[in-house]
Length: 370
Image (cartoon, rainbow, N blue to C red; front, side, top):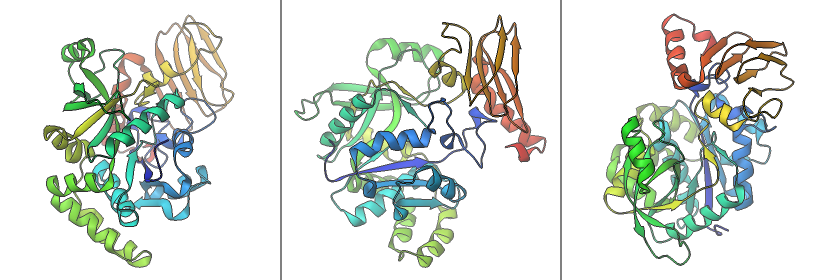
């Protein structure tokens, strides 16, 4: 187990534009049962984290417009453990504010940040990895989880790993030498087959004080703004300060503000994590994680309750919340997403380009479907 000082932070943000029209700005992907398991991605994240830490030490950071839905989906969430962002500011502000509030309560706290919209299939292995990560973080390093690449992904960032550190409580821990941006295909193949790189799963485990120390060095204005918010008295006054200060905060990912500079300074540890992780980033990921309709190796995959599909010489994924029959004939690796006000038809090989359809819809003035 991670220990009595461990606190979990669940950033629940973003609009999941590559999963449009299922995912919308007002109802993003983490609120949906994207994988057809009977629980939303947010609820599944909670289910993984709750065995590691009591609800009193789980903090969810989400957009103000999603607070009611988050509370409804997570009845075990302690009322004072939700932080509402007035507007999206990316992960550095979200995780930084949660870390600051937690550190004010418990200066010795170790926090773990776990995205609300990812999928993990081997929960026991996940728990064992987080226990190692907490042990490694006790010394003051920033710890991240690196997933063994299974194919040359160009949609993920990579971590270049160094030698084993010889930590008795974290025997698989290695020094993280550098974080690498999403590579082009040739580099992705080189990274994948070298054995020296891991996918960056966006999980960070660290002493709250250590994370905030790096943030203060690398983004002093952001740190100062968060400090102003955290110092305000709880209640109406903090809400007033939050509304005033938040719009001025820098919008940056925690990878840029904390992980990359800390790695350059030799302060990041990576724990290998092979527990069936996927960021559920697009409908191609959804198709890979779903099961065929009739158990065949190829065929149509479905997401939604009682989705009726007639498929003739076809394969791919059908997502529907409309309760009407969907027929697909003669199409291979197709994506069909049927909602009340928008229909998406795409090739699985172009799943990442769904984001471009969202941008185009905005350009033509169809914000009503976004």
